Image (cartoon, rainbow over all chains, first blue to last red; front, side):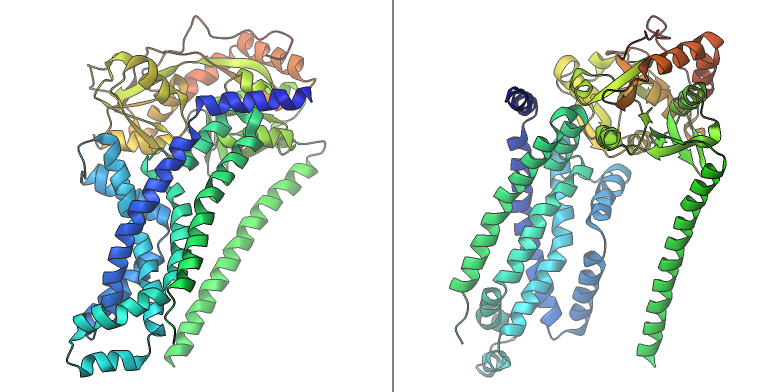
Length: 231
Length: 284
């Protein structure tokens, strides 16, 4: 019993020294902004891939295949070492915020490829007749996509987009290579300097991510049922 | 026809991967049999693989001050150089590798701290380092951690020295964290970083690399004491023997020789007030 309370005491001192909640909050912020950017970019890419213009189709497919098949760590390292250090492209004058923004850029360009494919799978759930009917009443490609195809496609793509969002939430830990002070970096630090409570530290971060990810999963499952297009 | 060609290319790629994996395997198992035939037990020593000047793997050779001390101590304990098997032990894995028995001892810039002593034992110290700064050789305005306000400072993820500078010396320093020190030094070379911080001997080892020679200098104004110990499993009985070996290495002059050889060409002086340390009989 004594040992246990002593262990708990050291665990508490470790939590006092290192701010786990603040680090996880950074991950949540990264997830939120990268989700918005990736969704926007992914929608544009999906439109390009289903458009009738061959060069757009080709460009969309090329983007997806390049970014989907490049490891996120490489994209992130490229952003920092090449774009920031060599080409000195700064998104913000604030030193730390600059890296935060670049991390969002890295996460967005990578996950946009996955959102694009999720949306495209949603487009495939829309019966061909819908698109044909839209064209028949005189809508050109963009209005047909905007008013007829995409609204149904998004509702059909909620489950796969939820999967991508969960992957995105967990992938925000890669932002540590972009010098963003987030959870994975803090965990590494804590394990290095507080090896006496190594298991408790690991469990804390595992629990932190469970708390972040499970609500996303529940929400998207619920939404995908509620918003499913009844056919 | 086209499908066929793609299938063949894919098979070729798979075959190449499998073959290279086999090659890697064969190499390491070959090493083990060689050690076994030398007779007697082997000793597995955890070192860093990526810190030039301390623990560094280039090809099949291991170099650095940690490696030299490890070899000397192992020899004193009755192991020949052939019987040493070096294992990579990254900072965050050191305690686990010791308690799981993956390594017998660790020489990997392992500072002795109270928190670590709860899970592992330390012999030594064999060196007392101090956190310091590495700057460009032409730099004259950074003389210590207090001159870093508004400057860009690089360190590896989870380093205490960067945090200490921010907390105690220069509040307005810009911290950049990279996965490895080499990336910090490369960033400094491109001019985006003003200084790199960590233990002085690690900085000296980095600056002593052939491609960086003459470009950087260690400021020489240490602001902490890091006592490098030999990590051992909890409850070990080897501390006295290892400490005796370290003392012998210092007395014979091999200690200083190893230190100079590994920081050659860099304007670096180890802290002579604290070095060489004189470990006693007991564990640190």
